[in-house]
Image (cartoon, rainbow, N blue to C red; front, side, top):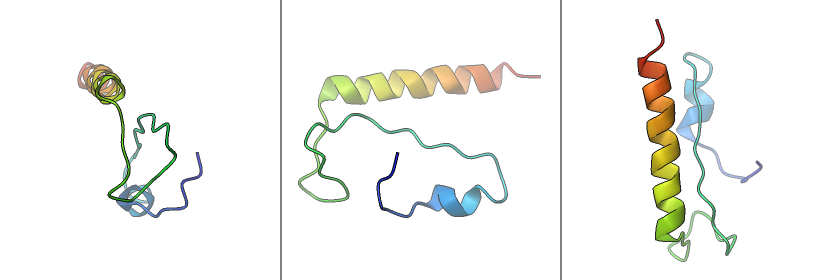
Length: 60
């Protein structure tokens, strides 16, 4: 997913496993005060993150 922006994850990835989670942004505006995401999309992102954290916590 090309966003054109640099993220800390890009630097951390050379040292530790790293991932990024994106939520839908229908306007396409990114890294701007005008950026907007619907509450339902944010909640879906929270649920996805919770699932991943639970999976990671249960790994041996």
